[in-house]
Image (tube, rainbow, N blue to C red):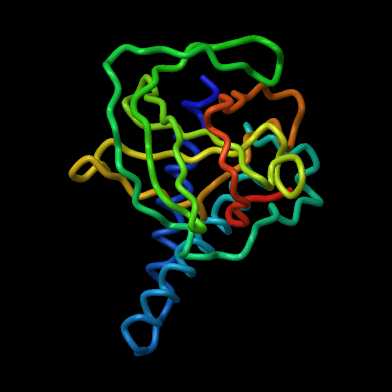
Length: 205
């Protein structure tokens, strides 16, 4: 239930962001600059939409909505949008993942992802949700310092897999609801999903 809600909320936020951005006027710029600016504006619009949702939605983890000024984020950095090779696992493999409340839940392991970031070779295991989407929990060198100690998440889609590869945009990394409200229980990334790099992008504490 927890991860399903996350994907639905995040997907709706992205859709709202696209609508918001469609109304933003743009001036002619060199192609590379325009692409970079458009990308940053899209990310910023999605953040604005999420902050608004957290301030107004009933299921929001934010308790003091009156004084809520928005989440904290690192600056947008397109360097942390990478393409990973995807090594699909045998269907039906499940892994028990610890939850912040002390219990465990079974997740279906879908594939191993390999990519390079900050000059280092990295690998993460991605999981399949009951709805057929992909859930990517991870920790990195910012965990328990600049970001939530129990890790951050990314939501990916099956249709984004192209020729056994998939794009991962760490600018979209988000913290679980339990980072903002201890009454929520969240999955903790398995030990193998630790990245020995500091990903200073996405949501932070």
